[in-house]
Length: 479
Image 1 (spheres, helix red, strand yellow):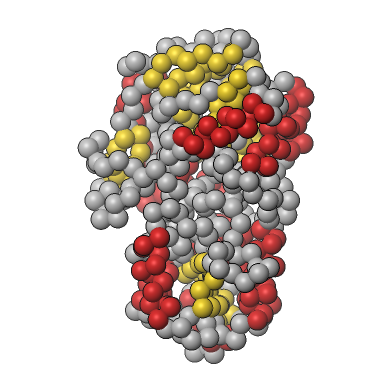
Image 2 (cartoon, rainbow, N blue to C red; image 1 turned 30 degrees about the vertical axis):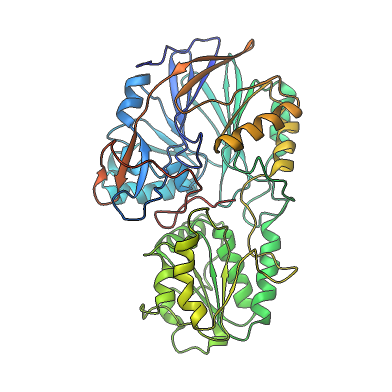
């Protein structure tokens, strides 16, 4: 199928261009009445850390040949597996308006500025909960909780019906930044008759309790209050609420605190500018911690997956004069999940700290009663809650491995869905009042990219089938 058929007025066509069979590289096309929009444009990461390829993206030229024109890119949130390809592709290879919330817009703007294309891009900002129209698509954003500020779902309404594109989410009752997921609006969509839901499947296999960022903040307060030495918290650069929880705990315990890691500092600055947080009590530079007693030192850094050039690796080597040196009596809190496949890299980074006697706390080995990390994704119980509120007739699971997608399909049917469809990458599925019809599959090659060289070729190695870290460190928070 070199080109997708023109979408009919009686249907909504869904084409997952990425995000199936793997975690990452989330691109989803929506077609209706001859028009197309794209939800998210993310990257996937290679298992090979040699540096030959930094990331993978779908071939934008092949995508353009398949659909002709894309009217807009709509962005759910600012994680790399949802926005990381924008700097390589937009606006020169795919030219259309980019719609995003203020926080995501700021992240995209920084990347486009680095690429030298910000002045050419048509970047449009909408508020969380805001609505806008693109051709025949009436789009309303819906507030979600996730491990990054201002995550949203999209209710994509057409005369053929409404599809809910969830993006990534959890149901955090006390998210600390922003308000809880807007289940009232999602329930209203269900009451009105929701045609379909295209939904995140990352934790569809996991029976998880409902967790909250408030639990992590309370645990960090206990850790900071009880440690006699310096305390360092390592988290993802986009997890601003986690970083601010560490700042809260540090200041309560009489410490000075700084942030280390370019992405973390940029995202914190954006969040402060938008009024989401207040960073006035955070030191401007990590070097300002020099000269303090260890008991007075606190730091938040990036590098949770053992990335060689991230702040944690530089910190562990003890070769960066701007960062404090840890030793016996000091504590490092690893406030993130280990992405499968990164265990060796993380162990290598942490080994010098262990040798110096630093106490390292992870969620697996934290003392009883302490929670140093919670997932940013809905477990099975939260997915079921989403389904019970939305009550879609049809469900297309996305964002997961084959096992995740199949587990989600079973859950959706148990929650009352009439029909589910587990597709493959590039498969076009037309949704109408009569059901889901498979139209065929387009071939979209996967291209390697490098930060310093842009898009390379389609002959790169196969992307990793696992959760991404970062480029670093604006990436997706793993579950």
